[in-house]
View 1 (cartoon, rainbow, N blue to C red):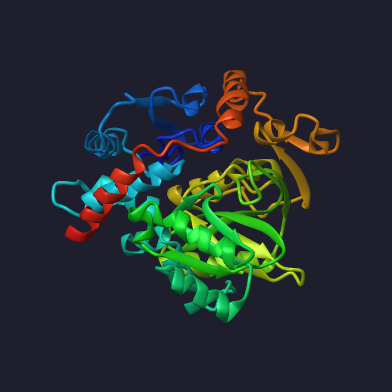
View 2: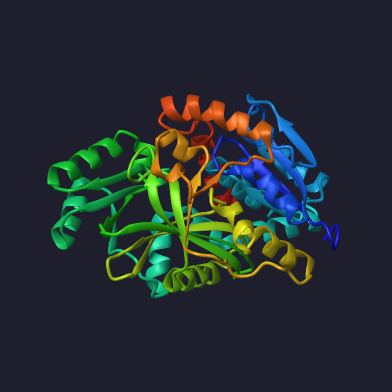
Length: 403
């Protein structure tokens, strides 16, 4: 640990994932020294809360990027590395695999251990199929599932379990690569569409039974398999589709979601931030459906409700008592900015009585979010650029095989 009072966090941003730019301020308020590691032009650079920035050109190769990330962890004396988007997760896991080789010092190894936990669990963290198997083995409530590698497999699953059937590509995110199939025709069309990308389809699709109910999430921060703190929310609105990211949420407490997260985190020996998604059925049962190995846009909200996740992490890294506790004042509705404003400028959720989460204390960031929201989010259907990810996944698979 570099400083008992001010641990160092390295925030990695390789794409404009909407929650990432709120993290520098959240970590700074919690007492961290904050370094951002980012490609030029990203929203996170508009936050004025970072103490320093490692800036990379947009055209940097993935080999150069990974070498720069490993060097940045050492140079900044980071205590923990936090990925803020899907590409950053892949890069962090690739660096974990690289660090198994000789020549990496103890400080870097400690930082990576604090960032991911048990290195053997990172493959499960990235795999929707492996997570479903793990959940079943831990008696965590989850939809019935199977691996689908052909149209015949998909039809056989539907024959056993009925419709609707949910198909998920292994690297799906933000609702893309997820198909809710109400009948045989829709199921066959989904399989054919996924098969157009052999690299994705070759990994097999996860087929799950459809759980009617409300979509919910719980974001947690953990160290060595122990959950330090968490925050749960149910989705009230999403955009641009029903399976897309949240735009308005209601924070609440749910005992089964909390227990399921603790069980999965313990089984993985997980460290860092994670968001676990659930379907809450009409009887209140919470069915685990996926895990995202990064913070999500509700992560920073814990501070408002007396349960700052960054303060929980600060206490764990320094060994000092933390003032962060369990969230208070729930349930509470929150309109996420700029997501709900982009979805519907006349939304009832933007009226009095609902907390509109605009970062007024960071005017440069508000300006950047507004431009981004009126441009890329609206006219590109919020689909993030996936230029690097296929190469990163191939490189990561090669590194993990050799390790």
